[in-house]
Image 1 (tube, rainbow, N blue to C red):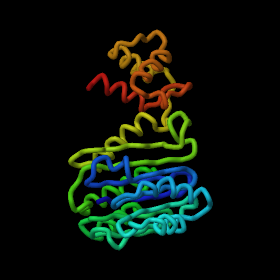
Image 2: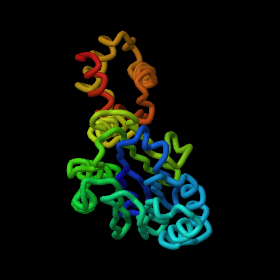
Image 3: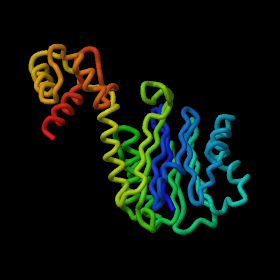
Image 4: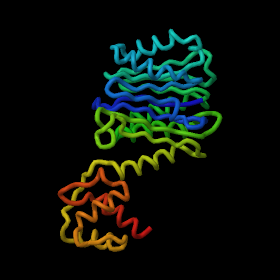
Length: 274
């Protein structure tokens, strides 16, 4: 019913699951991420005990394959199950029961496990693996590159409905208060994978790390003043008004004391022209 990739980033700091399916709100069922011990996907008549039990096994020191072996050995319906696990060290394992509906199967490599069932064919998994290995840039973008490649190769043979991206790292959550950095879901959509990519773009804009910070002077101050004026904010104290509008637009994570993130300025200017 589903195709997914479970992986650990090459630097060992992030774990993630990207998944798509002809199933309502697949993100509420399949993926689990628990830094720094690993990530799990449970699918094909998903056994939701695979998530807490699997993480307990990983926390106890079992590697990905041993964890998957233990989960399936204890499951009388293992023939109908499919799962992928990547542990804290980046070892990957995948399992496809012999009663899963075809096409069903999976592959593993350094730091990843890819699997799917009721697919249009083995090319879905093959294209996912090739896209993940070829992709560059942020870890989450590589996961979605793999997911989109599988979708465009045929994906779930029954059609499209939902997709999800779950990524975590120790202290990587909002404000450093959790280990979940990204939790995005498209629960019911005619083309969920591109929609998930669109949502990730919004997430990056709101919560990405400031990389191009400009001082509030000269042309930058002039541009910010014009944007704030058009949006109805006072301009006698640019820093104070910037803080206020950032709160309204959920841009607090991009505020910096030494000036303004250019992404924030461009977003405010976009609000004026939209």
